[in-house]
Amino acid sequence: MTPVEQASGGAGAIVDVVLSQKGGVGKSTIAVNLAAVIGENTRPNEADEDAPVVAAGIDPQGSMEKWADKVDEDTLPFDYVSTRGDNSVIPELKKDPLVRRIIVDCPGFMDVDPAAERSRDPLGHGAAADALRAVLDVADRAIVPINPEWLAYDPTEYTIERILRPRGIPFLVAVNRWDPRDGREDLDKLEAWLDEHGYPRAPQPIRKYKIHTNAAEKGLVVTRYAESGTALRAREDFYKLAIALDGLQVRH
Ligand SMILES: Nc1ncnc2c1ncn2[C@@H]1O[C@H](COP(=O)(O)OP(=O)(O)OP(=O)(O)O)[C@@H](O)[C@H]1O
Ligand SMILES: [Mg+2]
Picture 1 (tube, rainbow, N blue to C red):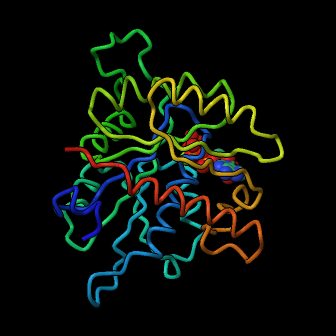
Picture 2 (cartoon, protein in one colour):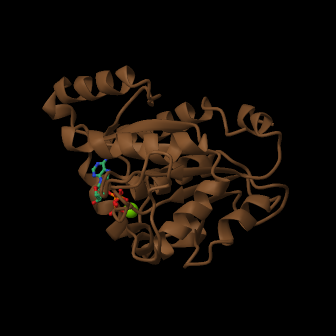
Picture 3 (cartoon, rainbow, N blue to C red):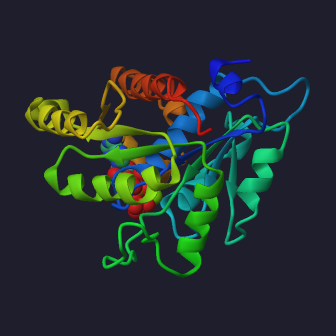
């Protein structure tokens, strides 16, 4: 058993949700590429053909869905599942003894009720909110992507304080799309803000590379980028995030 499996008592797959109220921060990119690097390092049980790592999309309009349409699934080290409005898919998958990890790509949730009291769930009503709630009910951990720009601070705080903490879901903030050419100023500011708030963060940011931007269109994941220095660095970022995630306890 890995430390993570021991922490979960070995019962069921671990469900990691990639979540932020803010759109476009890299939820789909992180979900797919985490599944790829974890999948490359997770052997199937015995001779079973199904991959023990699943990337799951709960948003039929989502970019992950579009990416999945392009990709040749047989060559992937993980399975892709789209719930298509069936909120029992992920809870059932979690019980599947052949599945070890489920990484869920969540849509941005814009239709929150801004007037909801702090003690109330602000997710509101509707199919998207119900899908999100169903996933959060079985989530063991969350990854909250954030970009190094001040506009991203508030939705991150909201996601953590209103959605994750009330549910007791352990989380890790992953700084994404940091451009090394911009220098460390904005990154340092963001990391200081996260540390001040006591928000655990992955030690290394995910760097901004153009190859990520074109990957979905080409049906590629980080483990399948054409060899280059950039491809290596891009891959390294996701391996480091996977390791940081391994150090995060699962929900009790
Ligand atoms: N590290 C990165 N380097 C370069 N481009 C990135 C990186 N991360 C994400 N992107 C690009 O930014 C855009 C938004 O990323 P993505 O679709 O993963 O975000 P999202 O949070 O899932 O968005 P949505 O809320 O719309 O679902 C995409 O074009 C993606 O390719
Ligand atoms: Mg997305």
